Length: 111
Image (cartoon, rainbow, N blue to C red; front, side, top):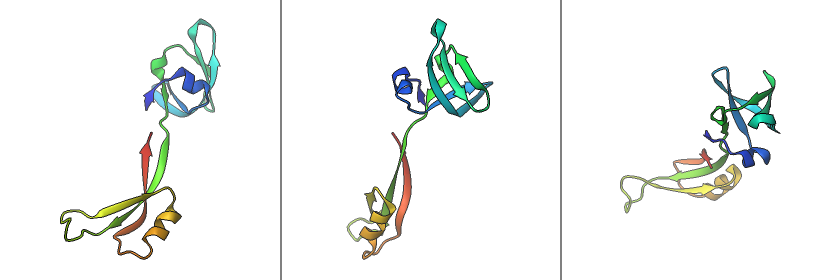
């Protein structure tokens, strides 16, 4: 998880909170309270105040890409080639007429 970013939390980006020693990811940032406390809402614990930002983290965004894997050619002996696509459908279409090892393999990348 990424360090807590107050401005990102205010924009509504996903937040996690450490409550009773466990990281909870179903947390909604509510706002700033008095005495520099930050207010979050959780289904399990309700609305709580957190004073130490070490107990808050930003949940990284993930994007899913789809890759097609192709066998090695005589020029490349140890590994083959790949192409990357935004959707599984595009990946399947692009690799439909080619000799491939695998088509539309999902890969998640954290931003």
